[in-house]
Image (cartoon, rainbow, N blue to C red; front, side, top):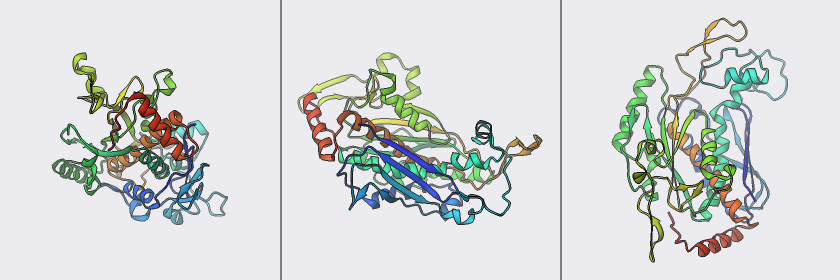
Length: 390
């Protein structure tokens, strides 16, 4: 048993679609919780004009009845309100009006390579699908994966640790309760002083026609040990997590636990020693590995950091080449955001939840959510695991 999520749709097309296949029957879903995540993806200081148009919600069109999954694929649709302004340019069917082609690829975007790959003369045929607008559908599907994880006692959350040159101080021993008010920060940063400095950084660079990248950090609490496997490279959970998160537009680096910092650390200071007592069972005093060893979860909180580059669509365009004339030109200037790191953290939550939900499905199987819970309880009893709820 596995879990599969697929999306369809273009940035300015009629809408986005997400299909989630592999959820057990009987899983209770909360429409408000799903749409809360959709709204959270639109948060963050530095967003552009598109967020003033869209009011994203996910409508379930298949696979759910009276708030519970039926065991078949679940279909969700997210409407693009902005399609009303693009109907001729993005109509699925031929139109009588003449639609101008776009020939100015943006450095750092999929524009040029996509046009080469698929033989397009109009870059809009690439950029519409490559746009991060597609992540709205991922967040819809990820909300269902979160509901499944929550039913098994696990939670996935995120916060921003860096925007531009501003870094928040490290927070050792961070817990699930620390994230209760993270969305109240305009940049979703847990440190108020650093958050204020990040807002200032965005304001300064935006006036210079610049975009900003940064780092967001994901935490998964309450995971059972042994998700993933060491026996095949395809089953190693760290590899699956890396692939999922690097698939997010503009994400250029992923670190698990202490990540790249471990490269310069002596071995005696790089690993998490193992302890046991009757009250806590097996446990660690440190979590440098980020809750993963040998491609499997250890039962400690899972910690992943993601680095994002600045967005390639700039209000002051970079130099490029017109692909129709091959003459020098400025890159395409589209409506854009100055900074999307806070929103990307929410997308990261969705992608991590999808991977983890898939790992649970592979390990536990079960046609009904009660079967899954029973299998998890039996597994925890077999290994003598003391469940750690968020």
